Length: 257
Image (cartoon, helix red, strand yellow):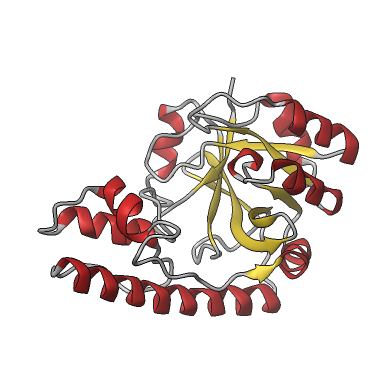
């Protein structure tokens, strides 16, 4: 039984939930703890590593993309306490996100001869652009926009700045109680990504991949590196509890956060 969903996005990045709507969504899923892990951004309204919002425990987290020897991977930091270095870096990354979104939108508008309604502000990302494409006069849905226009290697794709693995890990280690590798089976080099756990605290063992995966590589990494198990639904919508920790796993996680 999932009692903690530790990978959730809000409108602070590219999710649908807010701090005000998280409690109802958590109760609907019978989940008592939620970690807010917005992309490359701390949450402005979470001022402590862990808070209680309308009876639901909310862990302040962050999902940070980094460039590693295994390729681009995502790190999850839990129990955020703002440091000057982390705040400065995420502010820089958000400025780059805005510049990148403008470039992608300009390309899509020129290519499709449409006008997209996108607000260029911190947290903006490709999901916002895909939604705008789907809402425009163009003959593209949300998934089509990613598949044909703005996905990796598509004609309107623009890369964004990311930090290297060591820098990102150190920034999170200084600011967070626990740093974990996110969704290892989403990477092309699964074993290479899991080898990065040698210098991390945990790994996302439970995740809604939408397909069957063989958990044994992650289980071996947990044993080899004595990792804390994390897990979550990676919710960008308002449905929580599709993946997460059971009670025993959560108790160990909380000893770090």
